[in-house]
Length: 203
Image (cartoon, rainbow, N blue to C red; front, top):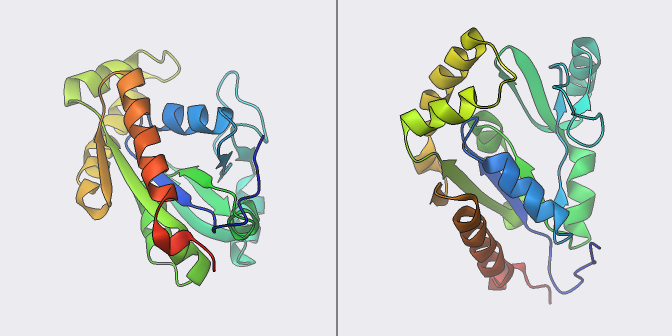
């Protein structure tokens, strides 16, 4: 159950990392605990097996996405692997104002847009973390182990992953991935510490 935290503003935890780094697993697990709200992104890519509209993504046609983009509905947006992704303002701002913590799983382009956002609530709430895979070979193994993408798609994801990994120094926090349990323990430690940041306390 997500509780309204009237004593402070919400935290916006922006998590980035290449495909296969484990960032989505961390964000989903934290959200499933009921402690934070997961910001569901929009995308123009087709759903993967098992994905549901409104739970994993808001799946939009490209024309619909571009219409919403022109209307200024997105907090951030980017094109990744030939598909459009974006976070709706309506998914984020009202919750932060109500004291609800939000977690976002977005790429480095989107994170940079939010990092540079002039909105005072976003600036007060913003925390960013980069999840770094333990090594190139482990990352390749994780991507290949999904069994949902072709060899060509995996090769493209590896190329993009290496580019994304070069942006780690732009983030306030870096998590070098290990086991799932160790990663989640350190992830929770970050969340706990940031909730005690004095600048978030109202009054």
